[in-house]
Image (cartoon, rainbow, N blue to C red; front, top):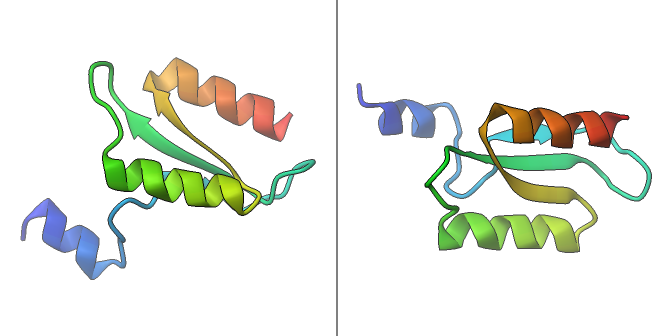
Length: 78
């Protein structure tokens, strides 16, 4: 079974962030992170989902690499 078929079978939705922390902090309802490796960029669909989440009170952004991701999570969870 291909990776894409496995993802769909487990409920994955296209554009939904790779990491989602369902823990409110300050003004935010939760944290959503789209993970990218250096040189890759979020798709139009991923950007749209992040924008919708930001509009609805979540902190949602794209992170590149481990260090960037760890920094955003650390800052969010404080």
